[in-house]
Length: 355
Length: 222
Image 1 (tube, rainbow over the protein chains, first blue to last red):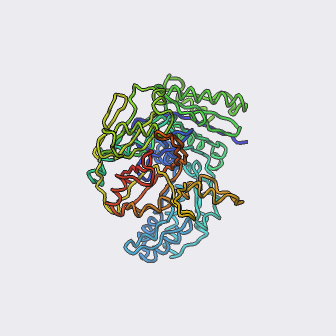
Image 2: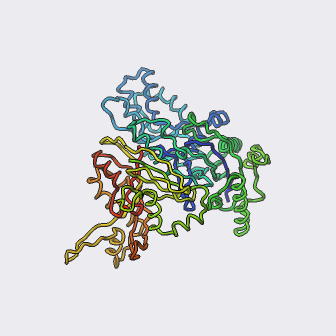
Image 3: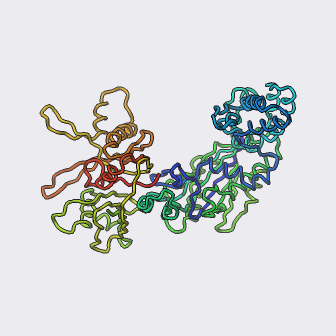
């Protein structure tokens, strides 16, 4: 049986546009028949992974997600005296091991060095790759066995948490595709949000024919505020396994994850809105039962003035009722941090989650 | 032209709202008419669209004249509406329309068919049943695509979302004649091809049955 840690967070953002769709509107979802604001899980994960908080807590254990590793290899080879054409050839071969590369583009001679998908590299892999260029430069050929040896047997924290999806032919044979140990739901508001009104405000843009109208486009709802419910489910055993059984590192990773989930907001439009917010409420559960999100608590949108406290009440009531009908999902009581009443602390949550 | 947002005043309770409309599209239609009818023989020179914002009925109208507020139960905001359009411009849109296809029978009498019902009837008896949402999306998209050219825009099927199929029945006029129309909700992204044709469509509406909250296409920069 695996130990699952479940986190339920309620965070309220002031007017903001954290996560936009292809039209620049805030992303939405319909839940319980009402439109809600939504922040996608990709957006959240990226915000956490790239946060200063994550970086400082887990320095040396975070990899890099990049398309440009080929360029790096190419530059290193050139610096070691390999002729440009040969270096390009070799670099393509190296990157091709990890994933497909881009097609050649006429005016961008180095385009074909880029991989067509983002590839997650572990720190150790990046270092080893840099070392390997020495050998490649000397032999003027790429030995696939060297590359196979280089692929990490354990993962950096970000890969261990959120997975590494690769389709490259060679690398997949050496490394099994890591299953993400952390599942993140899309955050949705606990209340209804209207985003339709902007057709009225957007008229101004159409009237003056300006393509790049600024303030006129900000309708009362285009940049909406909202109290979001966010659910995370962490398979603690899988996380440990992904990290090569390193218990201490898994602990560190969990702490950083809890802290960034509580404190780090997606950075969409941050400069215009400074909508940074901490979670107002966190409920952490720990147990071996099949995990469940409590989003049903908000199927009926929360209404009225005291949204946060009502949402907390709904969430706790739903949990209690779920326990009543299904039996205990978590072993023991959940750990709660409530910034509305000043109860509990983030520290308590982190300790509870890691111990 | 003017684009207006008309909301029921804050002093009106949901009960008042219901009393006014009786949940009947024709009553709603008459309510809006009252805001634009300055003389009994007025012809319709506006389009409207009904939305529910904050649980209150909210109307968007495009009209030649500004709506006149007859009593204090409405909150009206109007803006001049004269979109400067250019060919190739991408716009996001939303539209409620009455999607019907006119057909003549053997006696050359014209019949109007709701495209969704028509497709449903056509598929009746087939072993493989297409789910209704798929039917709505497919038939609705086809309908809109067939109108695109004459309305001066171009649209890709994958940029259309169709849902919200509804059938409305109500009694109209003195003879209480029964009228039934069905509506679909369209959302998506289009490209303006012929600005003057498109402007015409924005001002006068798309599809038949423009009187019942249909045909008003709202657009904004995509």
